[in-house]
Length: 142
Image (cartoon, rainbow, N blue to C red; front, side, top):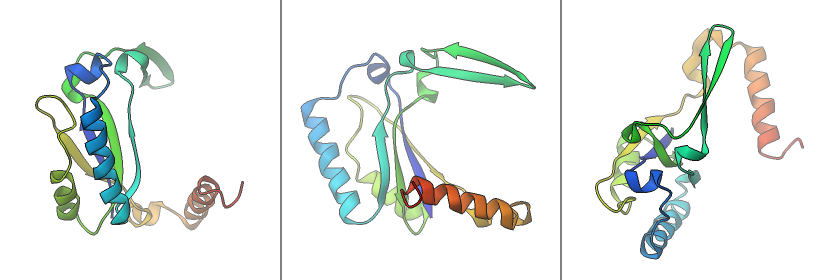
């Protein structure tokens, strides 16, 4: 099972305040643990929403909305992709994480869809296309 683990933004992260050397070191140690255990597939910190944009869809219309965005609690400051056996295992790994923010912090865990989750709608042709794209991303077909 793969899970996206999202670190929610804070006023500090949205202000663009860099993490302290102490936090960077602690996160580095945590990431090493995840890698050694074979859990970590990817992970990155995100720039503040003031450096981003949203695209709102309404039928065929597209509207670009420049950041920053108001609801800090709803924003993501960084993420990991974990591969583990269960939600419970993902939770246990997240509980080991250093507090990612100077004050209170929240980390959300969401399971990623796998091909089998889509049922018959995910036809053999669509599965083949998906496999081809994943191979290209992995560098097997570049």
